[in-house]
Amino acid sequence: MKKLFYFIIILIFGACSITSEEDKTNYGTNEGSASSPVELTVGTAKSGSVGRSGSSFYKFTTSSTGAGSYKLDISYSSSSSVITYLYSESGYSTVIEWNSCLASCIEYFYYMAFDASTTYYLRIYGSEAVTYSLTVSQGGSEGSKNNPVELTLSTAHSGKVEGTSSYGKSYYKFTTTSADNYTLTMNNSDDLDCQLYSNSGFTTVVDYYYNECTLGKNISDNFTGADASNGSPGSGLTEGTYYLKVEGESPTAKTTTYNITVQAASAL
Image 1 (cartoon, helix red, strand yellow):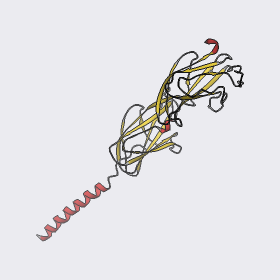
Image 2 (image 1 turned 180 degrees about the vertical axis):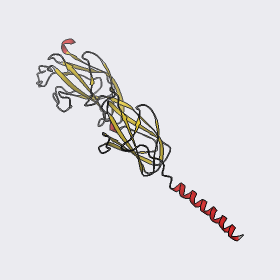
Image 3 (image 1 turned 45 degrees about the vertical axis):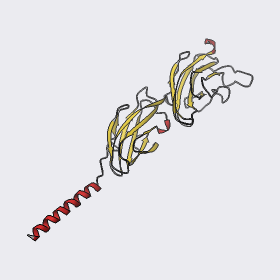
Image 4 (image 1 turned 135 degrees about the vertical axis):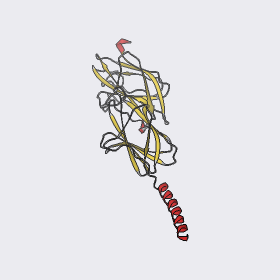
């Protein structure tokens, strides 16, 4: 009888021990892999999870007209943090940006400009097991260096830029049909700045002074050519394609909308 009693006691303590061990080793579930990441659809929420000290792998593809900024909304109730890594290629070796998130947050990836028709890769690392909801969506800036928004001369374009004075830019291009002075007009209610370039890499400034936008609200400036100087308006922009970068000037992140128009002086 005593043997039976001790046997029952051992079973009870053994069961308690097993239950406690299972709770302690709840590692959760990782999703995807570096070779087979889970596909995210832009604008659609996806339920996901990451295991303790593990990584989950995802990817998303921008549309053919989807150049601009993007954001990642991560929603979960755990007090544990996760770290998100953004990569430019499927090998998950070239990190573009990374950020740490505690509970729920939105990652803006420093308002960087994503290219159109391009696949980007995400890795989420969890220090503890976490389940969450992920949503990738477009942000408030448009265009990128590789895919600038094309402006049609004398036609207003409804544009926007999101970010701060340090991060966040919108990219445009326009093509002149003849040598002329060209006027840029914008109805921006917040302070903005812009710069005109002569090459698609946005590195060769037409002129640092006489073809640069005047920082402020309701920008209105003349682009008078690389030969402009003090007292001389210049002979105008030559025929060709020019590239325009618009950026915010706010110390805190915000989105500014505007109409932007470029037209030849002879058309005024």
